[in-house]
Length: 363
Image 1 (cartoon, rainbow, N blue to C red):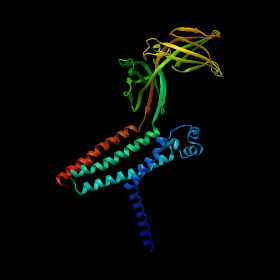
Image 2: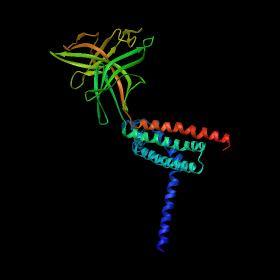
Image 3: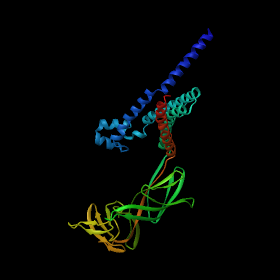
């Protein structure tokens, strides 16, 4: 009697395990998960992501806004439910991959031939590639690091990527122009430094980053920095200001100095100030001082010129230079993703081309 119960329990356990295995390796389940993920991505496409909750209440109404934030539709790709869906797809794909390799082994044992081996190798390769692509995406989502910085030329800035501390030095900058004067390409000569030692040096440009042991530094943008000096009552302060920025002249911020830099200053047909080209052929700095929103002083300075404002405040335009905008990124999942694409790239021709040859030969 005991043996029969043990056999019954054993067969029940095996039956459940067999059912679970069939469920995990089901193509229908995989297609269902793919479909659910595709639908789940729609809120992330059509709803702006990462905004403050008040943004959704204001633009979508109180009811829909509260639903968006409650269901994490404002951060779809970082939400727990989206991760769970991806994890289920990964488990399904892992089970399918294991099954494909099992089938491949059985086919080779039963009918060992070159064409059979190559043909049946295609499907395991494709599934392994998809598995690696998804695994690389998972690793990238949790362990990738990104950082944007703007460095004056010449200048340097420290950055932290993960647990590593680096220093980026911009030791040179150059712009190439089209015949009409517009920029065609811009270059930054960079040094990657760690603990005082130069690890790598390269001149980067758009789509030509610095690469070092998985760390990439991309040329993102550039702009102008102005060196200013403000003097009042015998006290002088130096500032480095980006083009278009403004300076608060007092603690409560009621007095503002707004700045606009024109590399090649001129006036248009209506008398409005413009820059004829982005090249510094006739550089001038226009400033507007406001108090409680009302204009107080306005003027224009060339490099090394000084203007004295109404209450004894002196402003000196000491000079200008470029800054380079850099995007620093390290994603340990990228090599795994590329390996997955390599498997897929090999698996597709093996599965279809070798299969066509076998049909032509009548195998």
